[in-house]
Image (cartoon, rainbow, N blue to C red; front, side, top):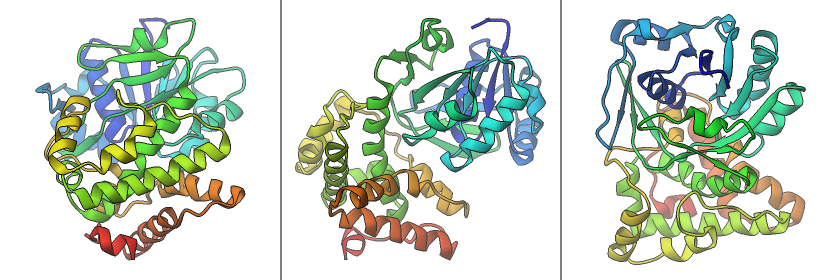
Length: 333
């Protein structure tokens, strides 16, 4: 990776703007390919990445390259893909047309199928999988707030891309098993939909045992589906993936103590799917619970809770009125 070349962020939404902002704050040349609304906000207010850990810096728009024209990827040494999974194929075609042939493409997306899509549509280019463990809240006025803990994980390569992308406040570490890491993140992402349906901050939701039991049952269905496929998920937390259901079912005080040692959560953190519902956007439910139901169909498994959650999220999408604010019992019934 040539240090003098631009780091392009393809699809700069919540995650893309935060990561791009941290990279720019660390002295990197950053180009954000974003929607006109996001560009106008940053041009008016600057780009302000903040973190529950205390980081808070406002970057003048002139320190970034901002455009909705993909031509800004023309001198990129690395392109970080941060679009929703449904938009991966279209973004791959844009990168194929506008980015250099020697660019390194890194997927910083939710889901487990994006790297295959990128590689299929970008033959000859180096494509690396990645996993972002933390949540970012779009706070408005150019502010993008990191609300949970964890390091970005990137597929290991000979060039040391993960290490070279790391900057103070944003650590990226390599892994030799990105597939396992992404499947492990999928298990955590099963709570994304539950949080969206609950209309509660994540910390408050996870502090309540009925919600954790619901999450535990979702993880149990997910683990069964993965076992049927011969998949071994790697947990993004220090705790093994198989420990998640029993730990989630622990009494509140014990669980709180365990959570405090493994993950930090801002009091106002919410899931990206909750934000999608609030903003009337299509969610990624097909790439979370939808993956589990698809495996279950092929393998003849019973995953009633996953099917129920898919149904409720699609109903909320169609209603266009944000989160329905359901209880655990309402989700189960």
